Image (tube, rainbow, N blue to C red; front, top):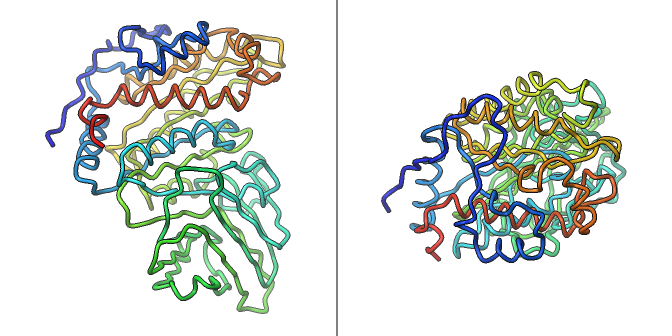
Length: 423
């Protein structure tokens, strides 16, 4: 299929420009329903904006998507990073479900997941880990022990037992691609444990340990949809196991969509994760979505430094482009919120200005969710409509699902019609 170069109609950024480019000419039936039910939402602004004449990286993504969907071959890696909005994995899982069920024969991969429930914090509802062992949980927001080498997930669980059991299964989801490879992220260096997979042991065809990269990869002869894993310590010396996540891989075509979110995370949180870039390079991104910013700017007007925020976001963008110079990047503007539940947060408008500047510089896309919500003070309207919680920061389940629907509709608008018509 011939690739279509994206020629973007949006002008170059003028410093201080903070108003989104909006049009009601291309509303989908779903968006028309949203506009009728929630007239305070600027649905006409629900699109990806660009602030340069063209974006080569987005045209690369367009070409790769077109080829993959037409041929039913190939893989693409999508990542989405943020804070508590993503740890809950509600609206992000709606997006994942669309990506992995919209085109038959392209189920993709589940990607990287973290056992939040074993770390004693809220776990996404679409999967579950269980273990009879006692675990300690750590988040890079709080740093924890200095010797923890946080990677992509920004979280860790530790246990010192000689026998450790972990089970995984999907829950209540239409997007549950099977896996025939498993990547276990753990301590870098010596790792004195043998692996046993119970009934799945008969299916293991290879087990490779990479001590310098901090992971072990296991290959299975068949596709699996659950995991029973036993770690057996093979040394008498004291040792504390550190686990940073599990990556479920397969040989099937499609999109791997990994949501990375930690409650309270900000840009400095991820910049401090020593193995973030190292782990990202194992499965380089084709699309990377940034939804980090709520915690960076949830403070008084005087306490927020827009230039520091810009510097931190630019450092993260550079890290992503170092892992894949052709990666398409989408910068999302944080939702409206209230500081201390009573002060409309004017910092979000300053974040939007910074994001537009970086979008022009790095030819990224922008999803202006702040503008879509209704801008300053709109979170109160969303709260009154049952879409936002009383903290005026987090959404209700209904609100998150609505956000997921809006993201899907915006993403679809950015695709050539030829892609959406292929089934």
